[in-house]
Amino acid sequence: MPMSRAGDTVRRARPAARGFTLIELLVVLTVIALIVTLATPMIQRAVPGVEIKTAAEGLRGELRLARSAAISTNRETWLLIDVETGVYRRSGAARARTVPPAIRLTLLTARREQIDETRGRIRFFPDGTSTGGAVRLSREARAYEVAVDWFDGRVSIDETQAQ
Image 1: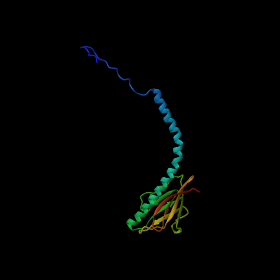
Image 2: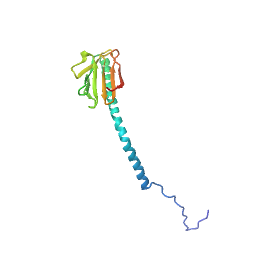
Image 3: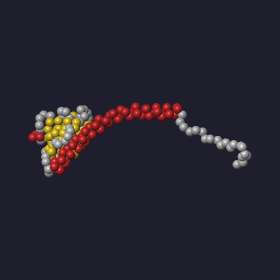
Image 4: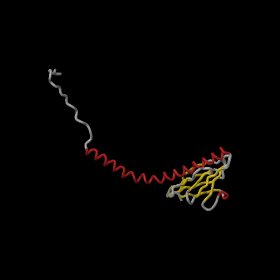
């Protein structure tokens, strides 16, 4: 290495600045826009399936809460379901819940639990048993059935064939 004399400046070559060119950035943005454009219809087709599954899970949760409340308070509780409006409410609950309007409900319950043509209920007893029943949620080609076993009050959910 050569020695520098006093007053001489030693200059070292700097590496070239690294980065992206404007063209590279535009190409990447174009590819991202293309992916979003192609993925949007696939996401929209999946949303109704997610919506009906979420509604079925919500209904199952309310039925389970009704059963737990019956056992813990040692009093009968029920879940009232209106198939016309899509509204359901648990006894003692502060507010009612609603399924999205595009989802159709069908209620199968004991005759004595039918209030009128569009409303009925599923009751739970302090020992955990129930009147039993099922609520079918359907939308387009998808359907779920939330069933309550009368013997032990167990609540289950199954995907079924749409009618």
